[in-house]
Length: 293
Image 1 (cartoon, rainbow, N blue to C red):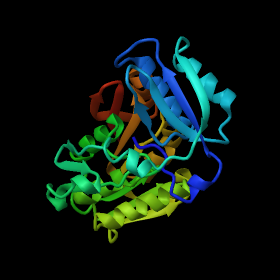
Image 2 (tube, rainbow, N blue to C red):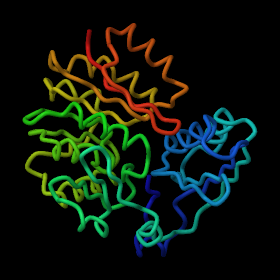
Image 3 (tube, rainbow, N blue to C red):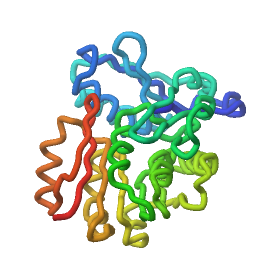
């Protein structure tokens, strides 16, 4: 999950990020740690850095409501130590170059440009780390791709909700989808996604659409596959639109859900006329493929 990136010009201006460091009460993987990461992402952090020890670090926009952020972090882990300060501009393109790795995810490899040469271009998703979420560094991205590799068929129409860097939309095209709509609201993410789509040679099949997924999805219907790697509360809000947009044999792949939320999410899905068709677990994160009954 990449952090925000500043260019040389921005370095001459005042800080535009809040630097948030949170040390959970328990070291290692834990529900609290996953909740903290989710809270940082929900408040605008493009990613979460795991520093030495157990500290998690994120960068959120300077205009973020600090009181609301602190409340969310306390809810995630009441005993965590939290420090928030204004961040000086940093050239993240250099800092993150050494931190991002190539990941083999199902039949695909997700890699930054400088590590992609050794892989088959037809099976490689090349993502340049930028402000947008999604480089293959986070379990939610990998879980969604693993599930998509078992769902997406040649010729499919796909909608990626909250596309971020475009990683899932590009993966869908590499898996054989003929038409992919990458829906995104964030202007910075849109530019990053468009660059990544062009870099992967799939611009003829993947198109970025600026707007609200709830409003746009009905206009794109029918689609056979919906991808949504976003926070669980937003997924719940989008379920009616997803259900209405899918073909009769369609599937939705949902990610960004904590393992501890699984039981509640399954109950909500079942009550809404969905069934679990497949699922994926990695660390504290649960990803799921759902279909209509």
